[in-house]
Image (tube, rainbow, N blue to C red; front, side):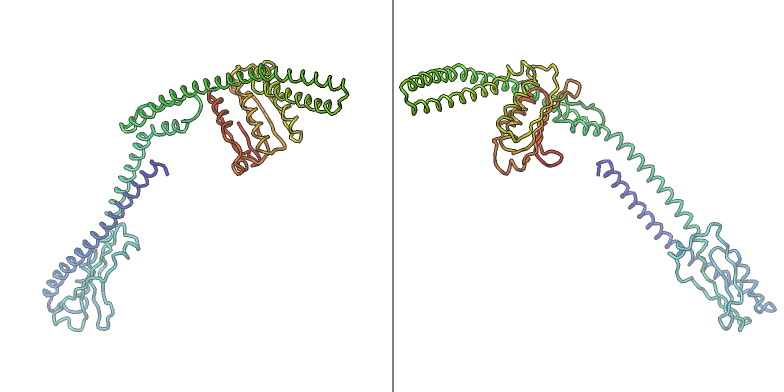
Length: 435
């Protein structure tokens, strides 16, 4: 859950607790008020009734007089007067005032208690007529309580709703800088210039934004320095390869040529003497020398691809694929390289990535298919992919093969040009893909 929703949920829960406390307070207050009002109403009504009864005398006697006295309580809000006959039959009852907006039944049930009852002492002249009692009638009082409670709770609910909306709006405005800051953090590590965030909003977020911008500046400086160092490292590696190629060509090549000349002379002398054993031995030596010369030429081509790249990247990669087809005839190698004008450093990096990836696949992946693709994806960007259907990364880790220096070298070359490098399993889970 986001910070904004967490804060709003906490405030909403607090408001619900406040409303619950308000309802509880209304319930307690209403109960105490109802008890006080009913007790007071019955007591006052009883006094009035008692005085009225004491003033009645002959010839005003009998049930009809008491009924007229009971009728004087018609419309009373809190008290009901009742005349009960000798056998518990209600002979007469007053009609309390009906509430204009009665409370719902469930609300009345919450406060339903035994009614307050007060018996009125009758003079002897009314002996045998029945008993005169006053009962509390809480319906009107509860209607007032219900009206007050609904008004109060509606006011509290409105205030809580307005407060919640105000808090939501303030949080939205106050935390808005976090959205741009979060988006900027997600782009940390991407190639190119890191985005900057505006240093606006609350002072706490301004400090965070300023710290992020400072970090982005330092990261870009470090990234630029790393690219320059990687470019220098790649240049040094190329120089070392070129120097090694020169040594092979200038030192090993002449020695192999001289050895072949000497072997040819010995072979000629042996043939002249008719020494077939020496002739056969010399023939084997010359064959080994021929293979060694071919191997040296192949090493020279791998160490110095400049001559191949002069004819185009596509030609160089095709030559690389042909080299491995000759050694792994059971592996199908497909090449799809777009011929476009590229910077020499870019072409060299692409060639080295394809070379190292293909070499790793052949040596460790045991694939039957390898695909090399170089495509332009617009805006001066080039995507290079080398995929195989071999054992995959899990198989490589399990076998313990590979030192990882080749992958590190590819990463350094790509990052030196401001690119991105990734190696992982293919989507179908079979084999490895370098992109």
